[in-house]
Length: 156
Image 1 (tube, rainbow, N blue to C red):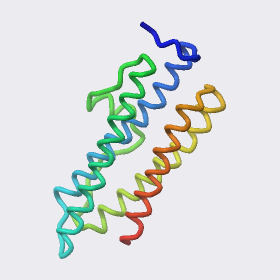
Image 2: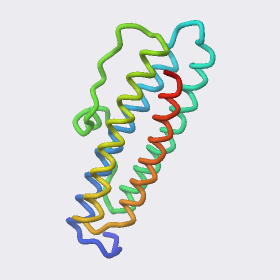
Image 3: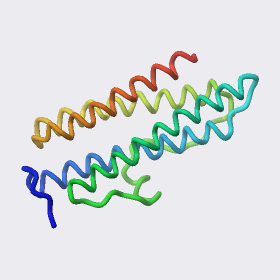
Image 4: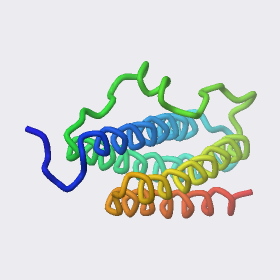
């Protein structure tokens, strides 16, 4: 049964697609953060290992919230690696070394890129699709990424 929530079927489909792209980005970013957690090396290994773990756990929570938001719009959340790689605007290239600084730089770049992407999506969803609720949800995600980016930047 389709949700009757004041949005047309096309609006719900467009919002779900926008959220699916964000979900793919979040999933890839979470995977890259987990990679940093598993593979970081150096004198500050333990503190960075713990730091990256806290970040990937937070990203896991957002992934679940985004998927549930898509479902609440009457659509299925993407859930395969193949689909995530098709939807994301990130790449998954590896780093030359496993230093904390290199991981932090890469993750910071990705968070900042996602912030820019979210900012554009927020405006589009509110203005073009008339869904203030979804734009507010995305604003919360953007603010959380701004904080994560700040935390990463503070290590450089």
